[in-house]
Amino acid sequence: MGHPLLKIRKPTLRDVAAYPIITHDPAFSGRWKVIDASHLFEPSMTSISLRINAYLRNHTFDFIRMFAPHLTRDAVRAALQEAR
Image (tube, rainbow, N blue to C red; front, side):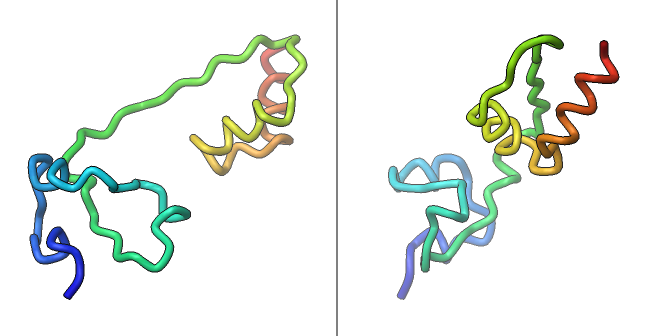
């Protein structure tokens, strides 16, 4: 039993594409099994630029935390303060 992708040791992108409802976020996986597909994509870097004097709303901090959980509000504010 279980999803057919769970039977494939190292699925290809073609294997994964055969099943359109797949999520990368564990919060959405619920009770389902999660397979590692990190080998399908090269690592990449994401940059977020902020204006030094801009007022940052809650959703901005939430957005930053989605990319880098270690960047708390205090850490972001401190970095902006140091850049002044």
